Image 1 (cartoon, rainbow, N blue to C red):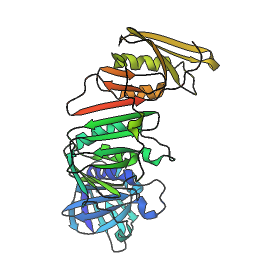
Image 2 (cartoon, helix red, strand yellow; image 1 turned 45 degrees about the vertical axis):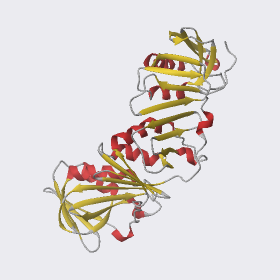
Image 3 (cartoon, rainbow, N blue to C red; image 1 turned 90 degrees about the vertical axis):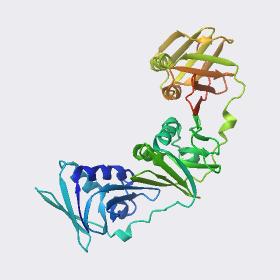
Length: 371
């Protein structure tokens, strides 16, 4: 196999696929990137057996072939080069030689036939959308994904693809987000869970333009112009999240998002380092947020005007979770819906954007007994 390629172009290609190269692989072949000539382009493939990434780059190929090259050493070498042409030659023993005007380098490659075969779920359900829409759905939900290995279903985002709209749901048991998009549709309804790790690669790599998603029984494929990301699905039952969303919320608070977020962050500095509890006291026309750390004899209280007309109420939240959901509301004004102090608080933007709707939820914490 022989080809020449721009060093900067190859670095971009390696950066695209290296996210699926495991740092400690059980199989040495997984520490490589598969280089293969295909239709006049250079096809780069990586895999950790759960996620596989394929990315195509432009190259001048003079002799077709394939080889698996150690990813880390090649990437580190190329990153130290300026943007110059690099010529690669691979012999029958899979020895990889590459040279520039000023130097020559040699690596021991691996047989391309030993690289794991990449699943191709093209024959399943197909969803046509754009990368920008999918990236937004991921960004709106992925922050609430759980990292608890004991609850594997919650370690990904639930995709609920429908014929009229689609929903994307994430929860870690403390907070929940449900993002609805009316532009993503399919000829049939289907629910599936995409792992968090795969979604981070999709968000980073998929182009803004056309994005096609193929879903089989066990795998999902996200495909744009130059990039394909294949991941195993999380085949576990997702929690019945609708059951935790309060229905009868008769207490409504409207407030400036940035003002409240800043206040939560300031007051939270004085909260308990173990519970991070803040106390929200709602009265007509005003909101008071309090925190106290008994062990350090510290406390804080701030009051801000707001739009609240219902009966007085007091509810506690973990400040970190409350700040997270506030940070992910795009509108300047946020709408809170409350029912009782022991039921979840719901957050929404006051103005929902066209073709979409977002609902966030934060579970309350039991209030301690300080006043």
